[in-house]
Amino acid sequence: MSWAGKILRVNLTAGTVTSEPLNMDWARDYIGSRGLGTKYLVEEVAATVDPLSADNKIIWATGPLTGTMASTGGRYTVITKGPLTGAIACSNSGGYWGAEFKMAGWDMVIFEGKSPKPVYLYVNDDVAELRDAAHLWGKSVWETEETLKKSLQDPLTRISSIGKAGENGVLFAAVVNDMHRAAGRSGVGAVMGSKNLKAIAVRGTKGVGNIRDPKAFMAAVKTAKKVLADNAVTGTGLPAMGTQVLMSVINEVGALPTRNHRDNQFEGAKDIGAEAMATPRKTDGKKHLVTNQACFGCTIACGRISKMDEGHFTIQNKPQYRGANGGLEYEAAWALGAANGVNDLEALQYANLLCNEEGIDPISFGATVGAVMELYDMGVLTKEQIGIDAKFGSAQTLAFLAEETVNGRGFGKEIGQGSKRLCAKYGHPELSMASKGQEFPAYDGRAIQGIGLAYATSNRGGCHLRGYTIASEVLGIPVKTDPLESEGKPDLVKAFQDATAAFDSSGLCIFTTFAWGLQDLAPQMQGACGEQYSIEELAKIGERIWNMEREFNNRAGFTSKDDSLPPRLTTPEGACKTGPAKGKFNELATMLPKYYAARGWDSEGRPTAATKARLGI
Image 1 (cartoon, rainbow, N blue to C red):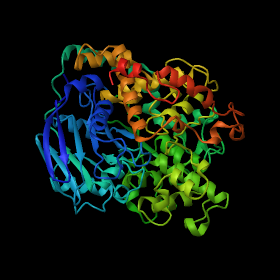
Image 2: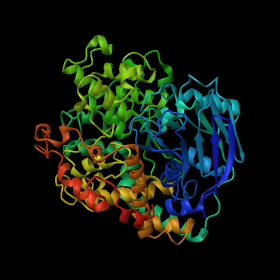
Image 3: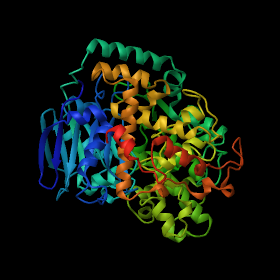
Image 4: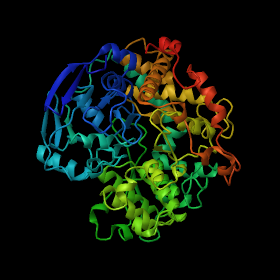
């Protein structure tokens, strides 16, 4: 079976690193990565723990297909209790770190306690030790990665680390690996920083063995890769255009949240999407987009590598931002752009680079800036407080606030607490476009009914990747449903949420699900791990994981009242102003009771005894 069969446990308080056998009973029931890591967390950590206290734990977890020949097998997950939301936090990243850690012979690493001084964990196959990180504290992600690779004298070492934002307690700080791949959401980087843990440096040379049936596995992998290659999205659209292909699509259906959700279409969308990235600039005749890039083992290659206009105001006298580097994904381009009314592609990329360099989530950052701009427009906040004229559409303001936030300066400290806390502080909690304290991503829940329900019920707060109903409601995958209709969406959301939990736990990328269903994952899991992983069993495991996360949140104090959306999204007064969704608002009140019923929960959103017994939780 393709688990490594052992985990690392690091007690930061005591400075000890020990090896333990993987709990195989849990592995069989929760697979790995998101599911298995969360199982360890909920068994070991009280749901009421302070996320930034030494009593919280933080886990890096791979899946059984991580590091294998399966397409996109480079994923890993960071699991903890999140400081942004107070809910379960589970953030997924690609790149090469996850595969490297698995190839070193480990399934996961659990950090507990708090180090009295800055440290990093060094792993080289069976060697695992804590080392002093005093020389790294205060450095950016980029500087940390470069410094460690030089000092370890091995350029193939893979680094997962935090920048200054994680050190400074920005509540949406990210964990970044391979310079610009990130476990980005819910503030996992802040938990890492609270423990004085700067980085994990890994070198793995063992590979991934123990495949249960190598011939069956490779046959399943080959078949599944062909499905990806033959699919219009995973075989053509994402490689050529990246996720930015969605900018014009979502804008046309009237579901691109603009200026803190005041509007639902952005007149500047054409200036910040995939087409703009691939068009030569008028200033220097060069394209913003340099090439696409793949994570470990990926046959899709949706990643973007971009190069900024060297004459742009944001990078004058800043040569470190002039080379080819991680480019804009759709969510970041939306959050830094449309959410604030900014249509300057180069300014968006500059802010994106700062998010990568110092490790912050561009979705929460950009959405919080949108709230700041609205508060400024209303006269609640002033230029003196913010440090600049914070008008919607100002690229200068975006760049300034990005610099302030990643460096923990001035008003950036308040932005770093997220929109829920900031808006509440200034008397307008309704202007936080968030659920459970986590900001919404780039799809309007008024114009796309199912995604609004998915935001409200997501176990980690506002999130599209917990149940990406956009696939069905906009793209027609696997079947087309009407985004403007609420009927049938509770069952659709549940199905997406459960299947996604299974995919996340396998160690593969959720983008494969544009082409794959559980019928494509099952043969790969059966070949690698065991015949029990049928389509039905994988769906049940996904449902088990979802309910386990929900139970943790309920114990943490969340109730049905937290399965909510801001009034701007759920009332006629906030209805969409333009486009196909004109006059629409989210029908959450109608959908939520039906969703609870579909889940086997009571009217307060609690899994019933019968549901827990059926799922074995």
